Length: 382
Image (cartoon, rainbow, N blue to C red; front, top):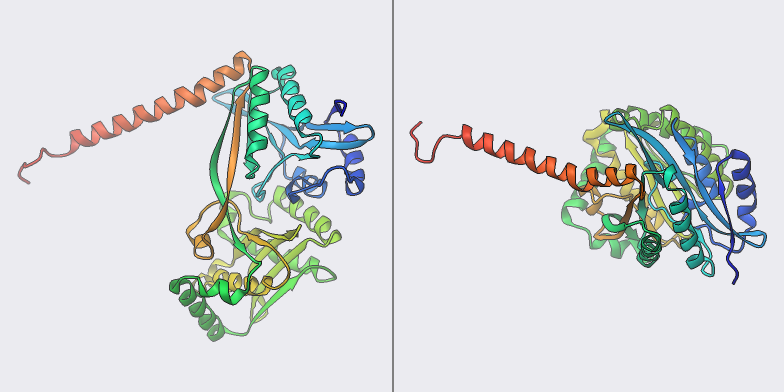
């Protein structure tokens, strides 16, 4: 095939043209959901000042055949403005990727590498996180970058645990630990003694607005309030509001609410796309923590998700202890790092790769030395 045409999308007007045409585009499959125009439109609302779109788009004749949703963020580090090129993500993003047709992949990766080289003065660091297990694609991009003089590394930085929903719930649950089953039963008993318990699964219709309001309220009183990422705050609220509108329109919205005597004490906000369930937000009222409402809700929703013809329930990146009680399966998540072949980029590379590790080693040595000096000699009397 001939080399596709190539352009950068930075304005709202240009982005809207791509967004309008995406649902009818049969050349590429917009997957996972975190690279779809619906998700990106919502995620953009979360971005703060100092962020610029740098979407890279390839067209084969009149159709978009490849798309890389990149942005450039600027942050001051020790008084120096560091420009990082990365995916358009939010804390709730689980996977990130290119949207690209099989026929266009190699040509697009080469063009992306060439573009990054020719625009080296616009960025200092390339940090692509949330990469799925399409490792061969990232290896090929790394090789393409190497051919234009940009060294890149790809490494596994974590996992995204999931529950396989393709079997029967009874078989799945029977394989769980006795401690988990005990915790589920204990939670159910405590909740039953505390009052009337009910669970709602809201996916569409007139109840969506009320369900979203409850999810936002619970998030606002949860421990996540201290992180700045609770859904009642400006950026997250704009994001979740737009996302809810978009996901309801395409039938991908899923909100679970656990009520005690009519009051919502736990919630989970999900997206269901391409047969997979992505748990984006799980929150509970800290005043009810002794009732373990999260454990109860997780058991209930999983029991109902089995048998729905779904494939996987992704719990979100991070092998947290509570997640591993529900599953022993996970997908690896990779990160690609590169630095611009400029003086600024290479200086940042030296700081990240050499200066900072050396400083950590020196601090550890100083701490250990002081500890040894303050400790009494072996055998000394008290």
